[in-house]
Image (cartoon, rainbow, N blue to C red; front, side, top):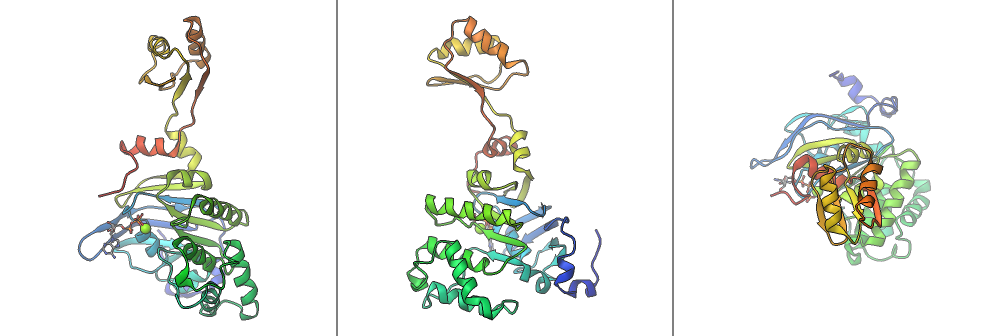
Length: 330
Ligand SMILES: Nc1ncnc2c1ncn2[C@@H]1O[C@H](COP(=O)(O)OP(=O)(O)OP(=O)(O)O)[C@@H](O)[C@H]1O
Ligand SMILES: [Mg+2]
């Protein structure tokens, strides 16, 4: 891999903005072993395409936050490399970070200040932020995350979900090329989660690449174009969400009041893994014409109410890849 000279690494933001088709995040064998020996991230090769909504998925303790901290230059990797917006991290933090809006686990807030004053203060600490537009931008960010009515309340009186929204608002104070959101829906109720999802879609349609971590499979499936799956510090798979789910086959589902006859006919038709549950019989889809299988059921007087292949979910893919459920790592 090409190495950057010190001069390039120190060059201004124009260099960062130059190649819009290059991956926004690329890591090679990125590894973090904490003092005390915990191997939190193990040889990670991650590629985040420009313009994607990239879901970084993994159970608790799988290394998501540790990876994000390395990407943001907050901690040094033990070995391996990370490039963000084409530049090596943490070395190019100064050039890269102004282009990134970030929400990382437990946003730091001043409890004695209101939500609005927290954002004003946060923005004032950013040398690239224009003071003349500060109040307007803070107001717009509060509005985007649904905190306008609570903006005057002291942050210490905020619920976890409200703190999370305020952290997100801080990431939205300026237009960014990349948003890095660590568990953005943590602490939110279902309505709040829906709002964040639609906000993420909105930001993505403006051209911002969004990298978000989650331990919720269906959340990733609903909002992300691409995903990577982590387990115990290792990357299990990454790619377009549609491809990941397609890698696992969905199941053929027959809905019928005649489940035992249906199961028998399906077995006679040579399909594998026939499972009966209430008024449904499911099995692996056979390689042959499905219409013939349906016809065989009907010919055997099975009353078929529903017949079709259910789309495989990311969870099916995860289970197929790991042979386990999506549970918390030890
Ligand atoms: N500062 C630290 N010192 C030592 N070990 C740590 C430290 N931070 C995290 N770990 C360990 O590293 C592993 C990965 O943790 P990390 O926080 O990156 O996981 P995560 O995927 O973000 O989990 P969660 O979904 O719970 O946020 C865990 O086993 C954790 O206990
Ligand atoms: Mg975490």
